[in-house]
Length: 497
Image 1 (cartoon, helix red, strand yellow):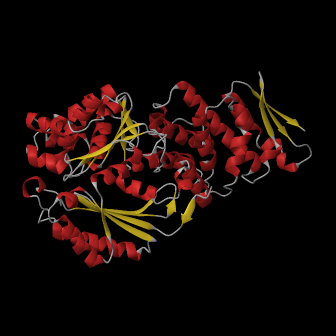
Image 2 (tube, rainbow, N blue to C red):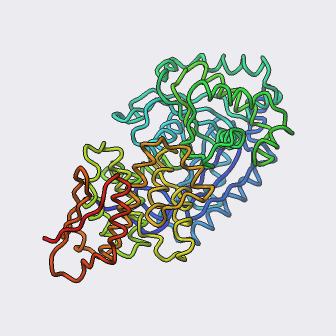
């Protein structure tokens, strides 16, 4: 399957109720990679509950920011530029007039999304990252809250969705930045319009939006969680209720100490937390999952051809990186098949992760040898991979780390190990040792490894190599075979065939 159909950048401008943002992606391919990301906090939706109009202080800044973003996108030679407007422009009496002025100033058409269209794009954004997402997506913006059910087997367009006037700017205006009974009663009253909340029970609740990302950041800091990556940060129901409820009780000064959150976002955090707390109580999901992908990525995803939408986001990204940075990108598939005898009855999920490790195992060859293992580990741990929960992310980073080193001395490595049980940790060590041996035998060149064969016996790990071929001079890789065998609790043995 072709991983990329357009190498020119594509841009999306999102005119939200609180912020206006430009994201320029590096082309049309399965995983949206942001080349440029800039926002302006214009608060277009501030005061909309009482005035019914756009915030007059925010309109000039929003117009100027959008005009800047259009010029930047053109300077970046984008293939296409989508401008999308959401709740504030949808609900304000002067919203359409504002958008017509934007079109006149920029020469670019603006799409005003309905609440349902916004909800569906948010759901596609989550599915773009997590194709097997199952539960309910909740996308919180400045002006609205979108709820939509998702399953791996059906499209969001055919599911249940709704847009509610529960954005953080509206909550602040109605409740005066207080998380008391007035706010909670308002939230419950507006949630009463949702007839499908119970359909999320026992499934996942996917939290989308800047306020909830900031909330996740504070929870990660407060828990001293070992992996500081927001995407796919997941909490079981009881822990989620405890942590979210804790934030609702904090004042501004306490929140500032709990995490690195922008000053403009801080006043809305307790309100966003109170809303999420009530949603958790009403829906009773089995887990809360924070997603950094939402409406913009959903728009990006909908522009992909169906074949590309059906692709695996992790393997597509790993293939791209191997092509861009690896010496011999075709070697990944060989490694995957060559070490397969070490992993009998391997579940599809784990095979996928091993495949990604094989693709990524050589892209750090240009790093300084003294720091190669550490750099490989940290980059894989923090790269914007889609389709990885935190356990899988830690496992992938450790597998690539062990391809270069067997030491556990790095503090970050020890932190990542905390996310894995003993069986999983043993597996990633085995993958790393196999990658090291495979690259040592072949030098990364295609076709060499395929002439050898690994076989795990009761007492020995047997490596069969062609006889009388100088490429397979065992003195140069025998110790790495012993290392791999040691991971399996046996001895290494080379035979010639």
